[in-house]
Length: 333
Ligand code: HPA
Ligand code: ZN
Image 1 (spheres, rainbow, N blue to C red):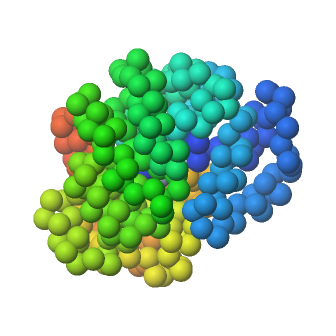
Image 2: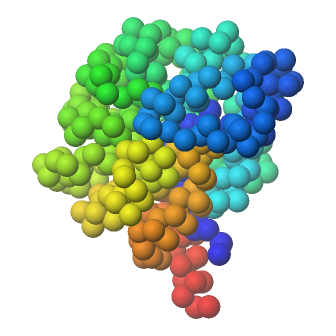
């Protein structure tokens, strides 16, 4: 089946590093890996929680060293995303990780921005970058990261907050998010993945975020659900990620149907597809199969994704018309 057009709004480019590319980049750059056996690498991708994933994920990233490495990483994702029906991608990356491994920000931006430009030309895919702050490194480091990124202001559209959630609440980052807002940057934050509803409240009220990444634990707080529905705050939900990191016990227990039922502006996303069992279309297939979502709900999710994205209004209208046309075509046949 042709996938519905959609925007992918929760995607860490570092989380698209497939074992094949990891091994190729390690060889290209002379970086030693614990193993170069693809099956063995994949076998390690079993996680108990967010932190056990992050430990493996960060350990792979020293293989990224040059413009070309970052280009190859993003180009592979964008090609795969285009095949999954993605028309618009808002892509997270973690400058602090690469700076920590001695890679200048200019290198990271050059490679990623080059791939984004080529994806537009090659696949008609619209994409932009969002700089994420690693919350476990604290507020001062986040502020330094924003300062380091601002010379590249024309190459990113917003800031986000990721990495270890519990113990690093949004309130710590109030000042740096206020600074980002003053720069005219969009603001999003991971909240309510492992952290409780209080993290979602803080992200909304203290950081002024325009979207919540994950947000599944918001369902534990009826007043918060009411707030999210009233304001139609987008929630970028990542079902395969939530199962892989045991944020939910099983796909059958995922709150996605309840979130849709509650009238929340939910979108579907792949988070770190190389690690969690697949890309956007794989997430669509999984929730169709295991949660019984049907065409009507997939249409809502696709429209939500375009409503929630930071692209120009004319693009959003065009993509939503494409969703309508795809549905009309599906009904006729
Ligand atoms: N949560 C927090 N940090 C992350 C994630 C995630 O799902 N993926 C990559 N960094
Ligand atoms: Zn994420």
